[in-house]
Image (cartoon, rainbow, N blue to C red; front, side, top):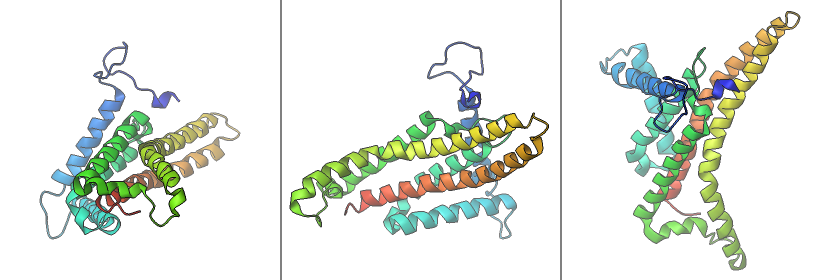
Length: 235
């Protein structure tokens, strides 16, 4: 599991919240890659788009359609935030597959902050937009009156568990895939089974590329679902 260990880039002392580590380095590289693609790569806005502009337009259209279909047309005003989330996660996942890189989204400290930001955003938005009516999200009016209080407690607990499941799902999947590849790589040194090990690594690497996109999609679509609950709090 050494591949997931934060390491200070300057010295070997204790890591503090302000220490520049391999985690912060690769988060900065992720942001730079996003800027290069979405800002620099598409600034020409040519009628015949370049490869970079085509990828940027595909990402834009994909996320825009997701927000519109899942959260509704009134959620489009929050599209920039959701687009930023998707871009950061998918780029961090893909860059983490490069040799000698670091997968920042394998750390719960990173995914946890992203999930808490989403949770805080939709909760505040829900109360700002709906006031006390936002609490209707926890009150199941279609259920028998006797069990509604119990269901309300269950719904309240599940609501506050959202950031936990939201963050662990992403971090767990990214960590698990990389750990499996590392295990197969360990067997590659054994001559008798090295061909099988190399084939397994290749297959897992292809699967991890797919998982990188799927996990970014899952995190983003759940954010859209939570946004829909905030804008239309009807259970």
